[in-house]
Image (cartoon, rainbow, N blue to C red):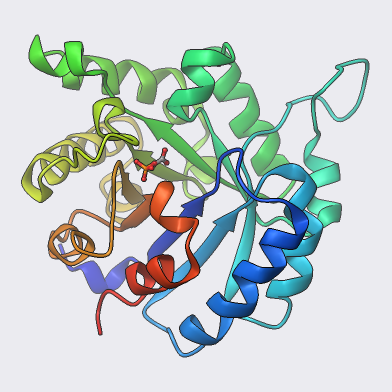
Length: 255
Ligand code: PGA
């Protein structure tokens, strides 16, 4: 399988960090550092209030803006939620769905992940659907079982056309924010498994085209090793995406 067929994506997930002013400051440093980067798609996911500032700063650049969550209804009495239409109008092109922090702290389930993914696709947003096991799962040999349940209950429920427009992020929960990265080989093994699930559920062609990002303590000093694995089609970066220089050096891992 040739990696050149799949365009890589390096995405930054800012979580609940950065005001609008901090967002503008980030982009003024970041944009010139990555403006010549052609080898991957670059995505930044700020918190909702900083999205307009990020969209303005990324205008006419090679950087796309993502949201970190959405609600599947178009509008309604859902205090604190946000719709696809609002995100599209604000200039988002991607949305992260089912991040482990949302599953763990905010009640996201397979069912809501599936609803959110379908809603995002219907609105023309590219969903980045997160899956990944906890440490106890890995230690008890349940990594594949958990990833399969999250795949089957989420992206696995899509139509083939919908599935062709989805990105998956494999994020082992024990590697998120812990400084403990999965080895490139460990990550590649799970990516391969997910790709095999996609082939069984959909087709070999769709599985081969599917982009699977790795997430969990990706840093400037480990990105090269991770990207040396053909199975890894990019990265979803948390902590190290908050600093413009560090995120730029991750984006520019080829140089
Ligand atoms: P981290 O976060 O890079 O800080 O581990 C990754 C993520 O949660 O997407």
